[in-house]
Amino acid sequence: MLQSLTSLYMSSPECHIYFGRQDKPYLIDADKTQINRVFTNLLQNAIQAIPEGQEGHVAISMKEEGPHWVVVEVIDNGAGISPEAQEKIFVPNFTTKSSGTGLGLAMSKNIVEQAGGEIWFRTSPGMGTTFFVRLPLVADQSEASYS
Ligand SMILES: Nc1ncnc2c1ncn2[C@@H]1O[C@H](COP(=O)(O)OP(=O)(O)OP(=O)(O)O)[C@@H](O)[C@H]1O
Ligand SMILES: [Mg+2]
Figure 1 (spheres, rainbow, N blue to C red):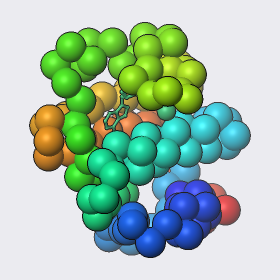
Figure 2: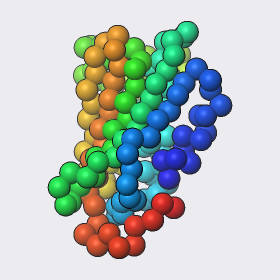
Figure 3: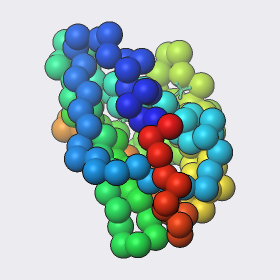
Figure 4: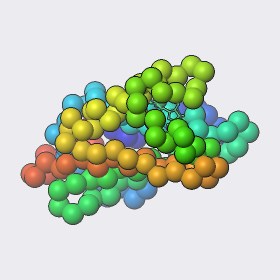
């Protein structure tokens, strides 16, 4: 699913998108359309964070955390988030973009929490930002697939 999202952005020669080691699919109990929205917004934010003229690198990684959780990381080498903005990014309508709604992260937080998960970030102004999404795994993973 994440692969199909990134193909949307492959047309940009200025931005390279990488997948980390992903040995298997994970089954989570969440609405597919909603989860799609979360990662579409995180990827879009990552790409939009790359300053004009800078080569962008965006990486996505998935890791199991114990038997019950999967953590997805969306890592960019963009502008980072200023300390003032850090406190507001999940607040509805907060945006630093001329054409942004500022609803992306507020919505993402709702969706992830609705699915029993958590979303947080680590940022270093001038160096980049990583968003983390932790989601609960379904106990029986035998039906997990890439679709
Ligand atoms: N990866 C990132 N790097 C730097 N700043 C970010 C990143 N992700 C989010 N932000 C900051 O958080 C703000 C809020 O993000 P959010 O996705 O909620 O809204 P938006 O991207 O501005 O608008 P929309 O999602 O409607 O396009 C952004 O305007 C930006 O300032
Ligand atoms: Mg956004």
